[in-house]
Image 1 (spheres, rainbow over the protein chains, first blue to last red):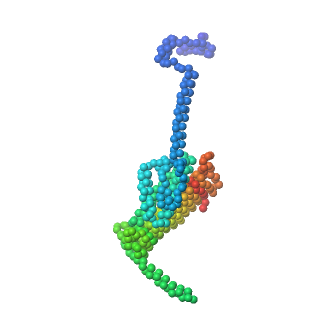
Image 2 (image 1 turned 45 degrees about the vertical axis):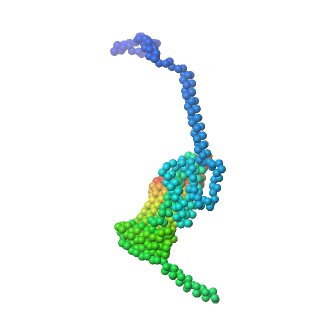
Length: 204
Length: 298
């Protein structure tokens, strides 16, 4: 060290070459480090860490695959039970004459899609009540109106079936879902209108 | 020659029988005092209800009644006047043809089964309903609601903004020169609507077609949907509008030279969207299998 001294008495360095190659610590630090490491498990080698991550990832994938399988089986069962015709059932095999007497022809039996989209118990109760009295209410209407209302209810039923069929092909279609809800609302409106109309003749 | 002789004898006989038949109708007339802005309720099962607004604070009823009709009750209490055609119990066949004049600012409530309803010159709110009867009314500035099951509805306005609600099951709806807010729903009836200036339009049909023509106010909203009915909309507005038309399996066309695009690669469905002018208003048209036509020119 050939440097000169500064005003505070410390040696000034003019180039890197003047610095020492190594500086020994003022005390031996290893005993403190060793004591601290004593309570901690020795770190695993890098290869072992990678294997462990891989195992966890593959276990997660297996669970995901199992969940996806269960979901697809459930979806298949739901589609099979709700959208596909029952074995032996012939769709639309109803004579016009029987349809005229049977109001179920125009109101339809509830399907799984009914349950999926219209699960409100109050709605179900009101609809069932209106359907129970439909035949009597229709009988109170003028014959021409009765025929037109029956035709309109058939139109609604067909619309519901068409929408449900389309939704079976494209279950996530928001447009179809909205139109189906509108059609359910239309059905309720017609049933309510028929009830009010049949009451009208009894006195307003 | 002989046939001419028979005809000359038969004709007077026929005319005489017609006079006798006409004479067999009962005639009812009554006038009661009413408040200028009161409420008038009228009900009749079959025949006709014709209501006109006038300047007098009175309700006048003139009725021609079939023999099957028991009586007509007219009662006035406070601001409320009620006119009711009463049929004998277990009878639904008697016709009554009512001609009623009410103070022009009255609120009018009419209820009919197969009777046709007409209302004109009434400035107050109108609530008109029938089952199979036809409803025809003049829109004079008061809000109006018309409702039928199978009867047609015909409304004619003079461009004053009102709130207008119509609904039918299978009846057709015709609206001319309406304005303001319009709401319509039908199952299988046709909606033919012409509005001079509409603020908000909402129309829904199951299988009936909608045909709309008219002007929208700046920033107006127009929403129409159907399951299988066609939607033909010619709506113009100063501020323009954002439009979106979607159909699952129907065709979409417009007069803007914009092509609709498919919504999915493997599923049916198309959508047309864009902006006309400043895009101040909103037009949304939706259908499952109906066709859509949209234009901003009449």
